[in-house]
Length: 216
Figure 1: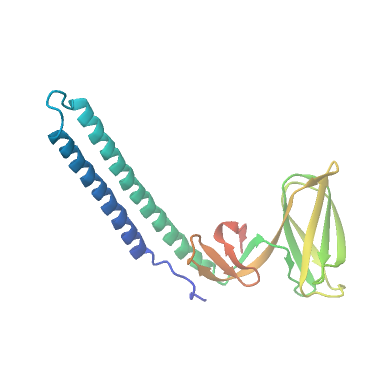
Figure 2 (figure 1 turned 180 degrees about the horizontal axis):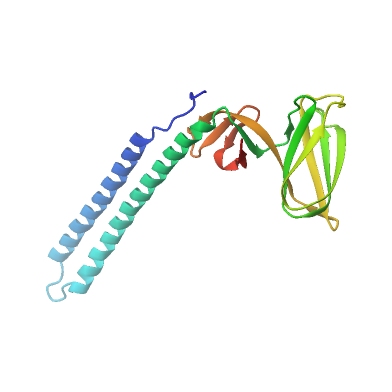
């Protein structure tokens, strides 16, 4: 397993960020109290601040401080969740996943192509293309329901089997139906260097973790 890109040590960043936000909230509260004291010391004796005004201003600063504390707590929980997700995803290294993509992998003269239909379709056509973009095989799949679909292609008689891709054309009452092509790929590593958890796949490169449609 390749763990070279795995980096889940965000504790220091979290601590530094939380400490900075906490210090900022404390500084804001301190400045507010100093201004309030100065305001009370220099108020007009004939028209002093009433208790309601003081109470309202104190409540406002407490609300601001409370929101800052809540933000810190939420950020801490979010970072912990990201770390747990990254650690759990390590178990995917070396395993196969299904992600959006259109590459065709031929093994022993056969290839399985997966796709999803956004709606049921009256007619579905699958085309296999070579590296130059020319169609080398066309399959009419007929009517299909919405959701995940799969087609096993016999590539034993194909003129070429390298650098192949496929596309799906689906219609319902002559209106196009959205089709998402899917492909199986192998997880090589887990990448946490960005803002989102990503998987480094053998053929597809970096793919966001939430793009994975199926495992195994």
